[in-house]
Length: 198
Image (cartoon, rainbow, N blue to C red; front, side, top):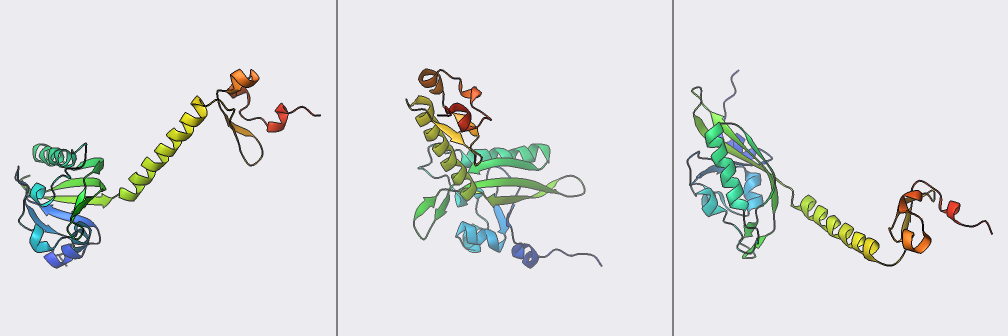
């Protein structure tokens, strides 16, 4: 039995997918999954037929402000190469009409051309995965690590980190001026190795 694609089947897909017309510069939106509509906080009527970058403008408060530029470059690459284009996590804020403001959003994007038998691009499937939580968590951890590093590296105190067995895993560079011992000499040794028996 031959599988027949229909619009209802596509719209029911659980992922975040758009079908885009492969005509620059508009890249008009032809359809999307219901899941995409929920995340975009829009109705199908507000998106279908609209130029992609009119439907999803850049956040004017985003200092880098390259979300639409990066995405446009990906779509243009597809027109030139007729090959799938996967993008690294990309900041592209989404406008929340209920709050009348942009929400910081990060996406992993894959743009895939759909070709006919002659190799002509019929459509582009725009697939996105919302990675906002993961990116913001990583950014927060990086800030914490930089603060810790600044405190430890630039501070005047001797700081050591021990594992559960009491073995040094880190010692700050201040061990040289304070104790006259290089930090590397502590690593892998017990704290008790550096304490006088008495």
